[in-house]
Length: 102
Image (cartoon, rainbow, N blue to C red; front, side):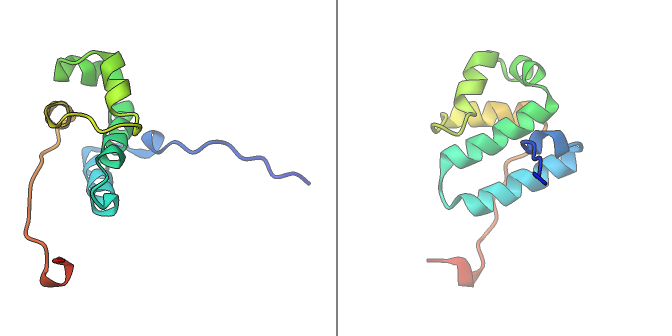
């Protein structure tokens, strides 16, 4: 008997702002400085909310958003800030614990 699988898309499971924020936070922690990885996570959240609406709210074109948030390259920090704002998220910073400082 053959097992049938289907692609899993995280965007289909990000339903609330809290889930989206938690997903982004987890991706930032796992990224280890990989800006493209974080951009991909923002792309997942943008797809969950609707890329057309995020494009409108950020003042960027849908095409440029898809490219910037594909995970294939690192978008400009300006683009990241516009997307975070359009998604209704907040960027914040905290002090790393002593064990985490390298």
